[in-house]
Image 1 (cartoon, rainbow, N blue to C red):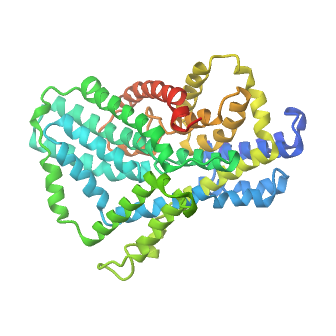
Image 2 (image 1 turned 90 degrees about the vertical axis):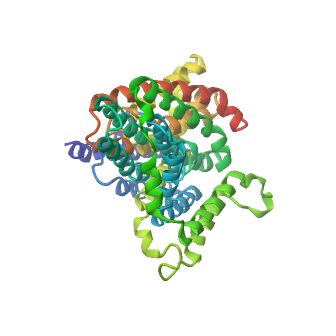
Image 3 (image 1 turned 120 degrees about the vertical axis):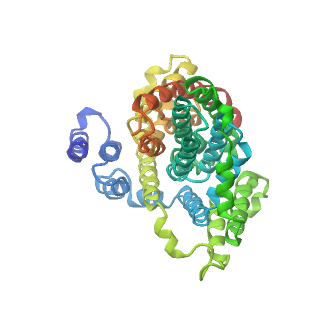
Length: 473
């Protein structure tokens, strides 16, 4: 039903806003961009057709309606941020192909073990760390079988009382879901909204955000939210009295089954380490060498095809592996950036700024809290990619209207649209763990609502106080 409604509503909104100028009073070009945006956003939200297919609409409709020219609409699909994300995806594929991600997870869990709370902490650290480099959804799907196996092991060994086992199961699964989302905040490639922020900043504001700059801003947010998550689950919502009776032998057994690190794992790990270090410390490289985060990502991707594998003909990755690359996400980036470029080119950004200027008299901290709250709860029922693609261009006009640097509002959009914890439909990690049948809806809603409130406080605080310092505003 949602898809059928969206299929009709999208074109209907386009027709109304494009062919009735009196509704907005806009000139032809910005009115066309607004109409196309409403069309695309409606189909993104309702998934009337596959989201990547919808993401091609700006390339078709913007030139046809006169919103912007074909060159501007098309060039966004080849934005450097798109290729940085592609390089990150390729490196993630190599990590998954050689099972390095599982070894990393099991090593962290085995080191942290000794009781149920430490297993939860180890799982949290492993999930969040992997999610910094691999998509939230892939991380959750990779960690879910590990979590379920841990739960099964503890049930069979009867380490805990039945009630405590039940609590541990819920806490561990929620840890996987929430840590996957929170970990994605820390890097530009960890979550789609982060990369949308960087791309829109570069295309619409001509301001570049480096990998290291984003980490300086977002890693503290990630760490604090993870600390809150740990104490919320283990000391408040799912406190276990006999927590000391569990060991982490399961993780050690899994590591034993994996055997010693193979050549492919070591080489993939070295490429991953090289790329990570260059991303983090790339600012120390002289400007004359022109090494950007995108160049670093593509360097890592090409190395994976160049370094020969002993298991099969060709490199650590072969071209057949690219069938698993999430090409749809790259098209989604392109569609969002195409709309953002049209916003700027047509002057629609200034119109939105004028519309939203009514809140200018309010204290800035109150504006920050209200925006954070609104976006975070909006993301509970909408895709975070759709939210970030829709709101990032509008953020620029809004910031201008209230005489604030746009990075503050854009940073709020990026972080808030990733932090949706209440519902199974909110994020792929939530949906993944809810599919296990170990959780009740009320467990996720209660824990998610509390974590949402903490996220609003933390994101608002860091966006208002720390972001201007981190980005040197």
